[in-house]
Length: 433
Image 1 (tube, rainbow, N blue to C red):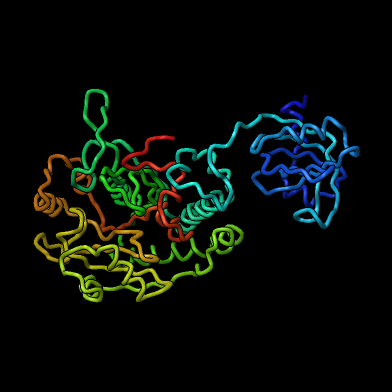
Image 2 (cartoon, rainbow, N blue to C red; image 1 turned 90 degrees about the vertical axis):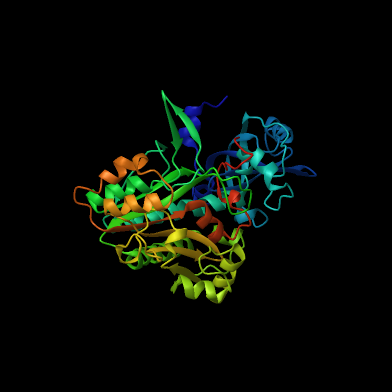
């Protein structure tokens, strides 16, 4: 029996086995496919880097090895030691003739279809998400998501932003409203954070520029292809920015992300059949002009259909709608002219490929104005005392925004449902796996 130490020391990835000039290689992975053709048994091994065919001809390999292949079940974990052979018939032009085969962990019958053209419905696949990750298509989505998050970090690290880790348990609503998940925190009532908003502002007012990727929770009882209740947000906050200048940062980071995906994930995009992804342009529309373009009502939010219509007018473009009505933006968004009764705010939304991917704007940094806006939103300033007080000791003007990681992944990958772009989705009905 081969030891784990020996496997660790001798095993090479399949992509490296294809390039290897050695006669003998050691690989380990999942049994992706097993088939028999007369006196020949084929075993396709899959690891994180690719697939390779193992070919055993009766009477030309050890009988134990030949018999062992016939007993392997799909998705079992298999170790193979053998000789590399060039052959035109094998995928990739090389195969392994096995000298040793050992099943490290035998798989039971697979309860869902894990082929890339699976007929299993998404809810059932999510019930068995650990198996759904075996699919190349599913892996492609999260390899792209990995590029998205790394590129986001890369962009803001290079611009001198400080990465922060905000708290996920809070004492009061970050954005007002009642869509919060309560938790018992020792003897106190607390909530899962619906946004890092208040904390990133505090840091921006001390260290000027910050960014983060953090989980947030929203307790809305929706059930749509666009919504989940636990989200990973990519946020920034920066001093001495207004809504226009902070929108430019969003434009440039999304352009950077898409450029990196196009560079690093060619195979994944091909596997997902994404053919129309381009580095986007940007257009900046006044809210009133934009709502009129789609025949909406001034003072109301865009419907999903109106968002799609607006994006259709500007293909391959991030569509910004700025200077929104103060009445439909959060309490912390700066009103135009720093007037408490201003009808227009310094707030914006951003649409990409027909869906809102971000909202943001300039924040209120004046304590008295913040108190007035809280009252106008029917919120109790006493619940926000520490937040308000943080602006009393030298707070610069500042602005920021948030992008949903899963939603941006959904749009880049061309997926029908944001849950496909979420490793372990949490929605109204799902708490496992």
